[in-house]
Length: 200
View 1: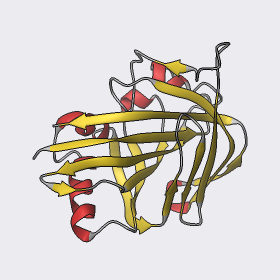
View 2: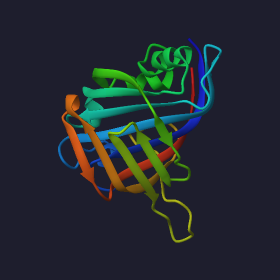
View 3: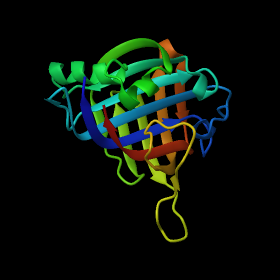
């Protein structure tokens, strides 16, 4: 199965800034509750155009991120067609192989797959993510002395392999999912944003 996907990633979690998971260390709280969302600006999966869609994973990570065994709830943009949804799930469950499969294998259990309204406005490390009524994150980037956005590269773990990540924080992060044991309403914790280009 072939795919070519280009777009933007947003990741927010309850670790402090900067999240230690990206350099292979244990999460600040021993476990990590995160939302990872991929907005596809353009791309195809087996010839199906999936540009403009968003897929997100709300996940509980029980320890060191490299050990996997995440428990996750998957959300598909409710504007996606059934054909687009099926194609996205094949890629993001690892069935299509390639770089996304390496990430998908870290998920040990999926508690639900749902369609939801998803608003993704993040560019250059700044913006918002909203999924249905239970998930919201606002992002602000850190900037260097030149005014450029602070970036993280060459990390042992990445949800966007090969791409630099804009380092930031979430002034607001709300996430509630009973099946995952997540009930958060916190401020000024970790947030990351990047671009991606996945091919298989």
